[in-house]
Image 1 (spheres, protein in one colour):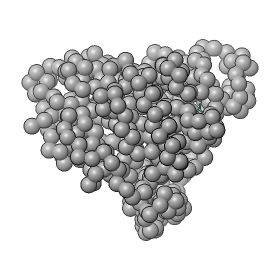
Image 2 (cartoon, protein in one colour):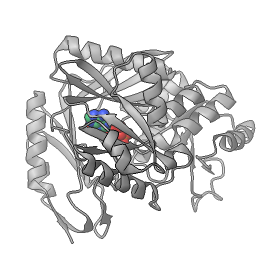
Image 3 (cartoon, protein in one colour):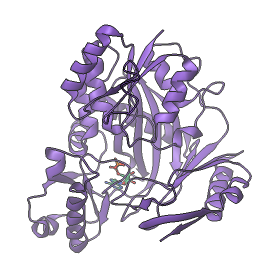
Image 4 (cartoon, helix red, strand yellow):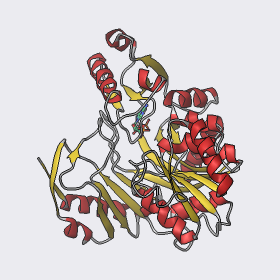
Length: 409
Ligand code: ADP
């Protein structure tokens, strides 16, 4: 029986989907997390604690484990585990991205340097040390610009500034985010931030699978809500994209060029791109699949999930079809409107009754302290819809969202 090692940070939304996929495929599953599980002593063959911030140490631990129970594939489910996964898989001689490529995709400054060096269209950028004087830096900046941490995700800490005052405020706000207890960054990522030219335009997300350096675009999502800042809250994703076919092809080509520039060759990629009159721009390429519960919007071939596809690829198994189902589909990540304690969620049934809506998954729990962007990274939940057209999917998502009410104290 083939055996898969899943690297599951305790904060991930992705566990269930990958565990379900492994069970459908009938593979033996080894789950590694950064915190010991209470069941670990009962299931030492299937549960492991690993320090994800120490790739060499983690690779050593797994190499010893694999001496006893061989591992056939290593799959990181989230941003936090892409580098350590590459280190482990390299050590075991398995299919993987090079460690340096995974690391470059995890550091927004390294990524910008590689992409601009390879002629991939990216915003102008500058690394700013948190030790620098923000007022002086703000005077030299061009506006509008975007300030962002180097190694967070889910738009956490990404802030637009239109003038020097907003720049200085964003600078201090990001510095405070990097000091939070629930943020673990080290080295350059804890000591600097990136300042970028703001790229106006429409945004899309490309979900892809790299196979031996080639890119298969699995889905291109439109993001119909404008993302103009000051914070960049993800909301609606709808696929197929309504952009013209030639532009969609350009977006796939530029994403492949970005992957090649980073050195990424194998496994899932999730890219954010913008499009304006000057063409496509790469905002980011992450060496992982789509976040949150969003993958539920995707099905391939005759009903395969994205996670099954990723596991099959990692194991080198045959994949019957990489084609997404024909039917338009979408998801809305329900943003946290304000800080406070969640007291009640109302309207879920009414929201699920909207034609086209397939599921409303509320992931925040009553009693939870909610932290909105830019400090937070979570969502209230996710709404899924399918329909005859992308427009119908978008309408259903908006209608369902309007029927939900969140009491926050
Ligand atoms: P994260 O990895 O946290 O998602 P990103 O760098 O992808 O961080 O930025 C999050 C979002 O912020 C993007 O999806 C985009 O909407 C917006 N954004 C980031 N950088 C820029 C930029 N230079 N110009 C315009 N929008 C940007």
